[in-house]
Image: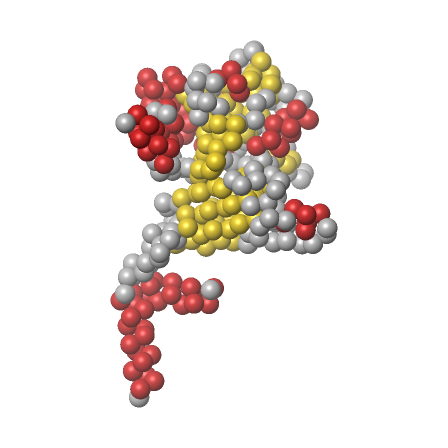
Length: 131
Length: 178
């Protein structure tokens, strides 16, 4: 009874409490020494094939090159110490040519703001499993 | 007060992706569709939008160029301080004459660039632009975004494919004011 009540309460909270985030940035960083590790034959994956963003919650892609050499990162060439900040305003699937991926492509999937109770639950469940 | 205004403009929200810090946009010397040598540095003092593509492109390039032409039109007189440069990834077919004909259909002020394959590859590499001939087809897969370069020749932002002319107008206006 207590368990069912807790589950119901949690679901209610998940459905009714508006989704928010302390930062809208989704940050990916090339750490220092990545190029050296790659040159040594190590496989270093930093960007996933697919990045999922949510409008109004986390909808700004931030790429940072902290390494000592210029690197192709996502869609572009980045200098050492440089960052690239790309905001999204439309829910859609964005394809970028990216030589860093085996497929030659990177997809950024931008989902709409979770405005309905069901969308909020889905968003929170996914966040729970992805973090 | 002027310094404050300048700082605020630097922080203004772009629709495009912004590089921080901005780096000098790599210069290049190609054959221009206007029969002159095409050097990026010639356009110092103007805002430049730099794109890469090819005149036989069936989808991305015509859309991008139409959007850019529309943006330039919307800018009115301000558009005189904007230069669109389009560098081919297909030098076999895109000579200066063909590029001129192709680009003029969108806007006669657009300037195309062509050259030897290794010259064009060097330009693409300096910007991190990807282009590859499609297997068994005459076309190319290529990066579909454009670069926004400020009046001082700094590579400031990257506009992904899919943005409309209003977004370009928005960002170009920010750069024109700086």
